[in-house]
Image 1 (cartoon, protein in one colour):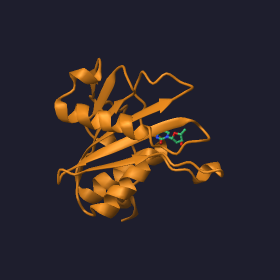
Image 2 (tube, helix red, strand yellow):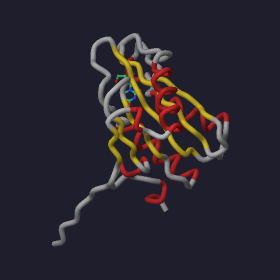
Image 3 (cartoon, protein in one colour):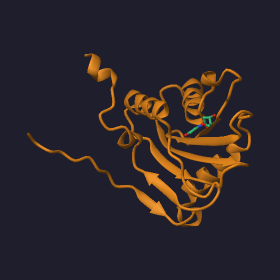
Length: 161
Ligand code: THU
């Protein structure tokens, strides 16, 4: 029997002001985009903004539904929009932020399991790592070099070949 270990490096910044200008602008856009979420059931407003390889930005926010499982996370709204408006264009970086009346937005959140699976699908499809910049409205910011690091042992199309 062999024991293996999984670990990865990511960056931790004390605040948005320590980020480079491009990442800071993307995170500010994600904070703003949280403000246009449709989240009347959870009151948890999430914004995600992508910077694409062609220089364009695309945004998404969570879209809830009275039938709760129908709701979509900001990340998947964003990925569907980016793939529809700019099909085949690689995604360099996605910033994700959130706001809520009920919890303090002072630390990063990271994508849910379904969104991790979706992020990895687009990394594979576009053959390009997706950097993640994760931060609340204030507080620390995490920079993850590629989304697939968050989904060890993930299932992919390769497994069906
Ligand atoms: N949500 C996102 O949009 N992204 C995340 O990374 C975590 C959760 C949404 C889903 C739901 O509308 C609300 O936040 C509460 O779970």
